[in-house]
Image (cartoon, rainbow, N blue to C red; front, side, top):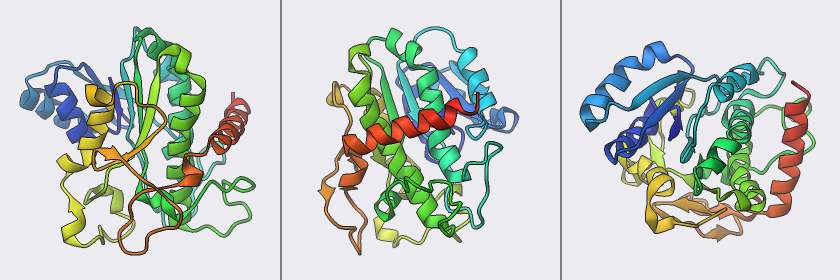
Length: 281
């Protein structure tokens, strides 16, 4: 199994739970050298020595390509967990893409497509995409996803990227069923991690917050549990399928917007993204 960003935040607990269950885990991170201490601690904690570190910069397609080219053998689960949130100023990747969209979605899309053959070899693989209740704040901005004309807003950029992560799961459901690959997205909940370093910390009321272990639980469920065997193209929160909501809740952000599960949107996003990636190779 691969867990992107598996050495920070809920990624640590996702890795820990899967490794404790006996999985061989590859933690994909930008700076493996700084994550080695965490990986060592996880090997000791879980009693599982099969926890590896590999370099991956999701905002750089060259790094994604190297990661994919070096992969050998089947892959039973890919947990697209890494992410950034609410960058205060507009930043672009080397390819000119808005950085949250590039890191949270485009890099994971390229990684997932590149690993399709390895996933198919597993004969029952799962792709898990960590989305967010933030997706309730905005859909994909089809005509300007990289904020060339729309005034940049940190939360809207984050919302778009997380909506796209959910649509990736829908797109996989619509395309890869013959490969035996299923894919689902999830909202981990409100957890105080480094993700909120640009927002002044977590602002969710304390009684609505989760621990990192609680936040990782839904990722682990979707990656490994027989309870969701065959479940495909859905959105989960609190270890259960989330309801589709017609309007954004004002007090407690729960559920998933219909636009994030729409197959037509998933098709449009898939084609648009293939065009982005194709132009950079």
